[in-house]
Amino acid sequence: MPAAPVTTPAAGYLPPYDWSAEFHAFTPQHWLTLAVFFGLMAGSCWLGRRWRGQRRERILRQAWIWTTFAWQSAAVVWYFLPANFEPYESWPLHLCDLAAWVAPFALLTQRRWLRSLLYFWGLGLCTQAFFTPVVEGGFGTVRYWLFFVGHTHIVGSALYDMIALGYRPTLRDWGVVTLITVAWLAAVTAINIGFDVNYGYSGNTKPGGRTLIDFLGPWPWRIGTLFLAGQVALGLVYLPWAVVRGLKSQESSKLK
Image (tube, rainbow, N blue to C red; front, side, top):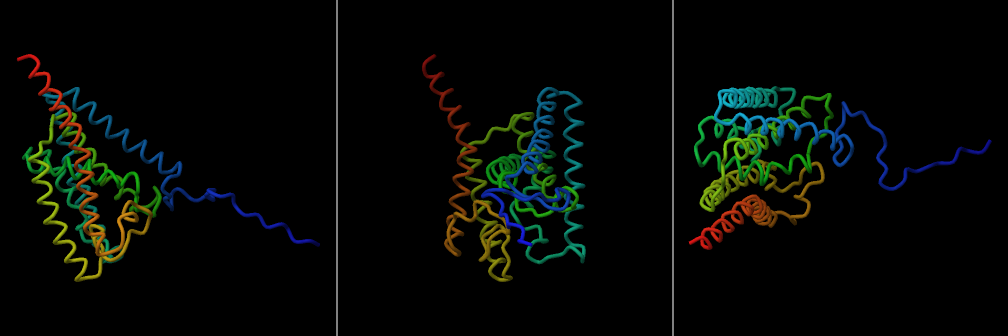
């Protein structure tokens, strides 16, 4: 009896998998995740702007702030449980780990430097987590929810501060954020070298999944290109406001 012919999947074909157990970027599962979480962010920003100056907006903002505090605290505890602890991942040293704590403090205190960090880190850098996510577990795993809800708190807070509360970045804000980022990068790189880890992706390894880090060259030169790429990203989120201010300045000059 002749053997059954062996068939191979067509190029680009992704075999079926369990969405609750696995996560694969650039698949319908990924697009659905983006739609749900960005939908939640958009709805919150719309309500915040509509209710601006009202008690309802303050209640909404406080609920977001304290939910973020609670979620991030629970995430730290979960990663430090003996069954989950991994020296190269569990310490809250990634930039997004810090941004997740900046977010509620920025909305709560409205201090300018915190709002600047939230805007530039949140929209310029942490948004990449949605488009090139490094997470393996599907929606049936804790890691999936810690990753996407945590980044929703960061990006959603930055959008809310801009849309509902009216934050507008200046060139000075960009400078302050750059200085803080350089200090963080220097500290985390020293930790990476000393303990052979890869926090902030400035260590001598790469993320588990395909990300923009793959295009930044070999280590240690990647540290420099990583910083430059970050500055380009920060510049891109500052550029619209620079253009708007330039146009307003031209209009004012014409009226004089």
